Length: 346
Image 1: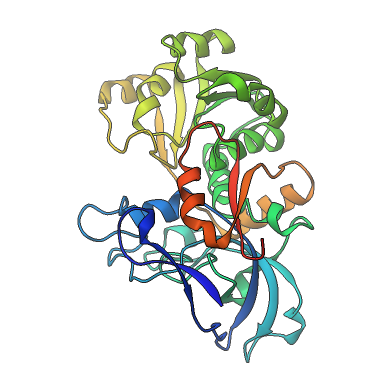
Image 2: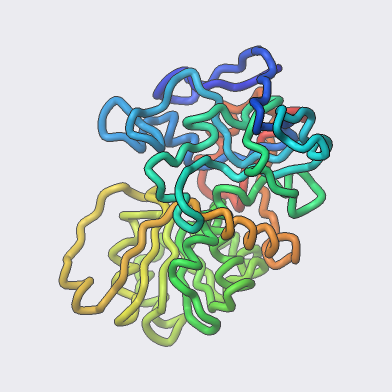
């Protein structure tokens, strides 16, 4: 089969197209023919070494073992079952829950042995992948490509919203609203939890599309008066922030939050380190949440909301598998809306 491997930490030249044997499923696994694999920041940061402070980087302390096939947002069809897997799974169209863990239900995402597909296991930048049968779920939509865009971004966005206990009528600011997680944060906060959404993006040419997704107001982070514009749009301080940017909008976020407000972050594309005046936290009674991924039950609730049409796939562009370098380069460009997807059969 064809696969794309990361050969070490570095730029996109560390992505190589290879030919290798189709993997065999172990007794509790299934073999999946990959139909679509969406790109996430996580596999780019893994390749760049951005998760580590030294020579190691990945979801686990020991770092990634190279070569590694990345890719975690995977849909496909089961073509072979392991010894202890019900043979009726063959032929099922599935979306893969993205990690294994021995953690108790509700805490599996924070277990010390959490291991991620595409980082600790070979992932979906390939024509075939193996994965535990119990972590394969029915696709929420009929289309493979559309169903592939929710896994990591959607699970992360859903978990963020549940952590903040967003209530109908609250005002939520979403940073990076045009990205994979951000565009889903807009939809989930608005269409599932009933919040008023202020979407923050770069260029306002996406305003119409973001409002179609559920945003009530769309503002540009390039504005010199962003804090004032946020307060004016809401008629005062806001209830919560769903953030994927990090440093670039952190100060503004704390400034516009109400007393007792909540700030949840799942990314730092705009800077991994920031300055914090602790007085802002305690004098405004602000709660900070760090968040990434989520639980299997949250994943089920996410897929159900997708199947009901409350959350829609937002796809910017697709690439053939062999153009993984070009796809990851394109992924990092500004001005996109939604996900970039690799297609093994394109």
